Image (cartoon, rainbow, N blue to C red; front, side):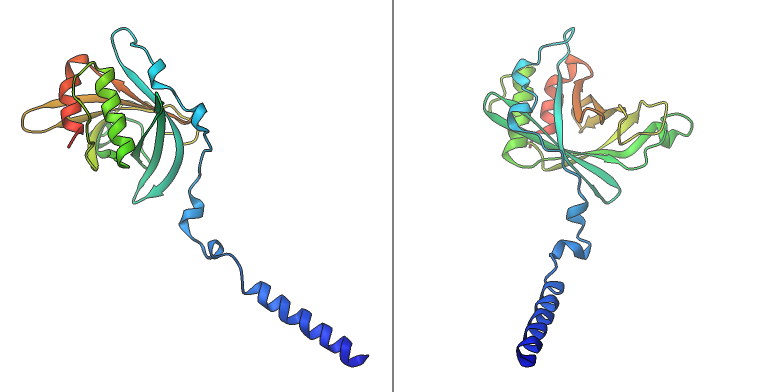
Length: 210
């Protein structure tokens, strides 16, 4: 009887050691688990086909579905729908953006905003934008990554939890220039690509495409 009791105690002890040594790998401090995600069903995403011109301007809102911190930026994955196509883009915003007054470096943020393509879904977003602009461009391919200097249009430091900060980005090459407003609505998990001036439409598409 004593032998059986001792055997049971030994078995339970070994089982306990095995359980302690088999903790999930995500408890090791992996940064992937520190990336907040917003669960948005496809049917709940903004339908860009329903977005109409606002006093002659085309403004496209997209839902924030994921965010993560990387190299001094907060990277937001944003999505919307157009017909049956899922559209997607990664928008990066510098961390710790101050109020846009005072020193010139606060007013004009060098490398303040980033656009990163995720592949075909971003290409379709650019194609949809061109269609909204009524440009006969055919299917487009978005550049992999672009970093923009931007005007900081905010009177207070950016509130990354529930603020509504606004920026204007500048795009240019040797031949063309364009501007675009990037409006964040963190409370409602929306980032909007808002038109600065219809005269920039052709240049904007040219500067965003490969």
